[in-house]
Length: 166
Image (cartoon, rainbow, N blue to C red):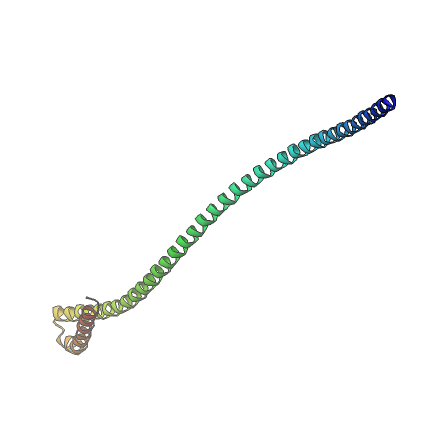
């Protein structure tokens, strides 16, 4: 019986050893597969990290470009606002110049009328003076009324001009 017990114990020990060896081989195979998977995952992680770094650089470049373009847009909007303000100022200046031009044109027309009456008065006085120097009293008497009226009109227009324009 002892021999049988020893055989049973030996057979049990052999079975346990064989079973342990089989389990150890299974664990080694699992470890090998896990190591291979880990290497593949590490490779994939490195690849994805590289891609992520590339995308990050691209995004940083794009962000810098957007920032530059936004700054340029702000400057452009500021320039447009400045130009619009200047355009309004120039329009106001143009309107003022047009008003001044119209006033000067009117003043010039009035002054031209004054000058015409003064020239008429002066011509009449010269003609009257010529008759007086020549002793032609009849001719002088004939034009003295017209000359007087012409000179009175010239004085009146000149006075009106001075009152109106200074």
